[in-house]
View (tube, rainbow, N blue to C red):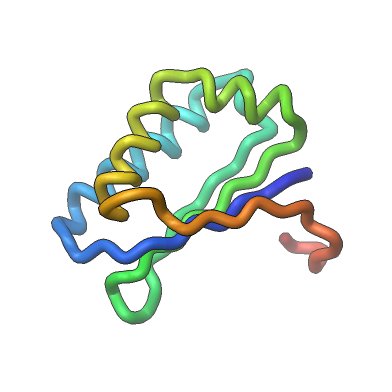
Length: 100
């Protein structure tokens, strides 16, 4: 299992941000070859900082998702929202609670 945390500040039209994230999450959810990939997004309490978390079970799953048009479209929009490349940290989870 690998994961990524992405953060950036965005104070533009929230409905555009929401629609973009929903489109990506729905595309992943409707892609049978992406079953090992999960994604969630959040808005920090300050109302501006955006946080994305992704997890995948294998490099093959990640490679598949990254090769899809929905990924290219979403990545381009995130770069727009972030006004450049967002901060991103890729990691290997070591431990978690049972309900994670």
